[in-house]
Image 1: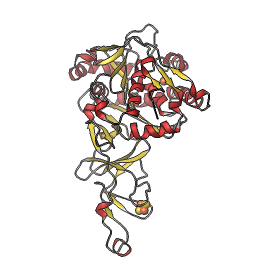
Image 2: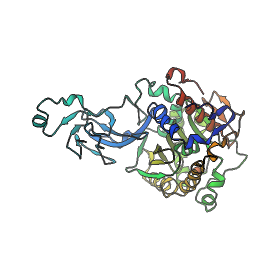
Image 3: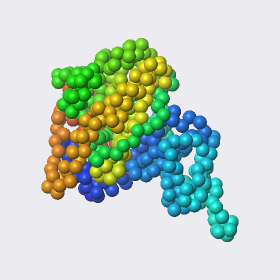
Image 4: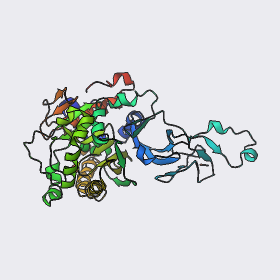
Length: 424
Ligand code: FES
Ligand SMILES: [Fe+2]
């Protein structure tokens, strides 16, 4: 389907049909989810040989498994016999897993190790070598974040991330040892298109003072956005990745976290360089559906598509590995209270996101064009930040970068035409 008449990022105009049209959803699965580098897990979740966790790439179930030699591998979590889901657990440790239906057994290298009645029923003619778990095309880690793609022609992960690598460092590699992820994952399904959630985390500072007004006015958050605050900015480091930043000396976190930040400031600056004096990354998105938040509440989340009008959120809480236990506990509790499934901020967001999607079901409603024009023409490329920026505290510049990339991916099969590495 032609996308250029549905997404006019240069003028900030988006057709609502991209949120509900089943054909667009199907095209998105093929052109975006099956080709991009997709976040699977953090290495700290599978430290030992045999450790595994389950994940998704789009709607494809995946198992990430550390083999006996210690290499991280990822496969479709689907039995090659009749397509049963092989592993039903979120995580665990195993040298091999056996399918619940007929008992085919796969090793942690993905090879099919055992088939019941192989000699008698298959008369010795069955070749197990031909029926392993299908592996992803490429798998790489960046600072403990494990990504994979089903596209053998996708560029290497670092190239795909481009300038976003520095911003990921600012979330996940500020101190020795990086971060660790608390055990356990929160999962919940919301009746909205995944892009409505993704665009919010890409660059929607606009909704904060209004949608989260009640949470803020009850003193839940110390943050008090000011409409003329020019220190918060939106950054687009290229390839559809997006970041929302705060002032480097922002003091809207909890007292424990502010004190911790002061303690580690010189160490962080040493690792990240002088750019950290210009901006403090607070919310980030690796295109298309991996998002992270850092502040008093630290969240990693993935927006898994579950049909045009449904999204399954998977969310984890992370902390600097070297943070003192009291700071880790503060961040863990803040993560639950604000961005867990019952979190105050989460509920405010989801109530709005679901209505933004559901009202597009009407045949007339879906022909309506949405406005993403805030800050149009005000963006500039900032060499020091390595990103397109909009310095005013609210802007839809990141929305436009995100949808420009999405539209380009939807229509372009050749990676060489996708401007990888370019700042746009
Ligand atoms: S479906 Fe897995 S063994 Fe038959
Ligand atoms: Fe929000």
